[in-house]
Image (cartoon, rainbow, N blue to C red; front, side, top):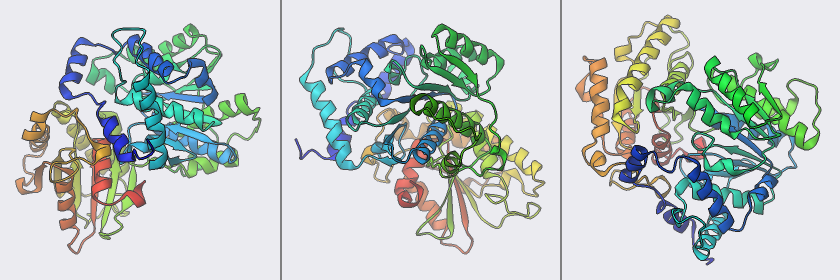
Length: 503
């Protein structure tokens, strides 16, 4: 047993991924996205030796939302670690960028490969040894995300954490993280309209899903929301008998605070994180500091890290290259990304009346080419508005010197890094680069005069990085924006050798 390695664990975990055909069929039938998913997870929990009530010992701060739930989790974790340095703080997030063990952290550090393998196979072996099921239609083994969630619960209980910051995977009501009976506090970040447009859901339906993490006797927090969504969240808090419903007010001192995460949108995430942390500490530790922003909170917010989100990384080897990494993958998050990137001191020179001498490269991918026109159109319009706002003399058509659309395949030989393996991409799509060609066509329609030899459709991330490295051999510094997909960002960090400086 002890010889089973981290690599073995990753291979076993990847065997639980659903392929593209299975996912498409499930979406079409809308199956296993309802309460059956919760029932399945509860069965798996029992099979590995726990009762739902056992999970309360993790002391959970449960966080969901359409936008900002990951950043809010990172802020909350950072605040708690500075406020209670003697505590053991667990953090569970998704997805990972480079290594799956990033999803489960103790005191800010991902599990070591040895610990991940140890706890992984303890859960795996218990499920394999105990195959009795209460419901015949419950699969023998959990799907990928459910399994790693069970591993996280097992880790946090075995390590006896003092607090757990638990990010919802998808939705809220039916998410497998939502089996904790009594969290300490729950929070909902921004309800964006992207899910309305892309998934065909109404804002009320989205709010109903997110509000499903509210629990009886537990404080229910939310950021300010569109009125239609706020009404539903308030109703859910009442229906589920939350102890209080709080719309998080502004925190004095925030406008002057430089947050650890870049982007103006992060101030809303930092605000609810501060309220979540304060509420948690009040409930669990009788915390009573009357300062609206105590010193440990300030330190936590200033030092929070959340790789791959509005992150500028100087290349440690190719010194003329600067990477701008943001896994934005919705219209609204891409808008925030460009707001950050196309600003003075980032991609624009401090003197915005001059034209930048730096070549700029866009590396982009998304999960479906059907979303490409709206994504790229939104990027284009945001660049235009940013250039106008800063009175820049630059032209949107020539803002990027090279544009690359590549598949999320890690290496040029067609292989994935084990932790980045994705069987959910249709084989035909990969073989024909269908999505990437759709993106290139959309770009050409937006910018008909963009040089064809500067527009690249490539089969792997390694191919894209090669273009950047070749460009970086010139005399001028190079700025590279990588966005559209967290999987893409993670692959670039891996292939470009940025792990030590980015993670």
